[in-house]
Length: 142
Image (cartoon, rainbow, N blue to C red; front, side, top):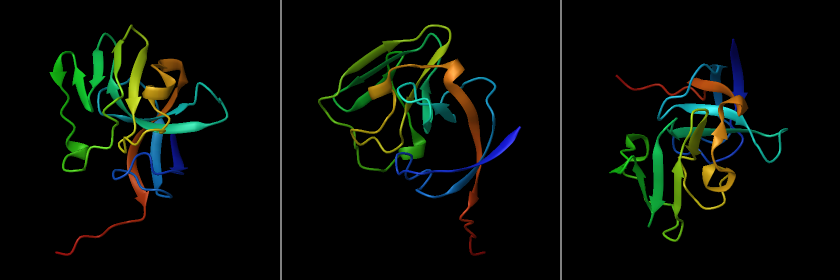
């Protein structure tokens, strides 16, 4: 089933800007770099949108502003060229089981509600996966 959602914050910039309309579909299974909506485990009335960074059996480490997935530096082309916005002091180390993921905001400013605050997100909390932006429409000049 498909849904139209409005992004209501700047945590996914530059990928998804504030007030953009997006098309989502019912969640099936997670994969790395997928954008998903999920219930905030702290406040179930809140729906958040973030990017899946790690999936089952992955080990994710954040140290000195860098992210390591299964021991290797994580490649993130969707935020390449942007200034690093993650605090150098933040250190996290997760090893995932069978039914949870690690999600991060594309905009890595401290205070964004992602796995750095919420911890691993269980599959049962994930609602939808991002399909495409609907509005605003951007046209390219030929």
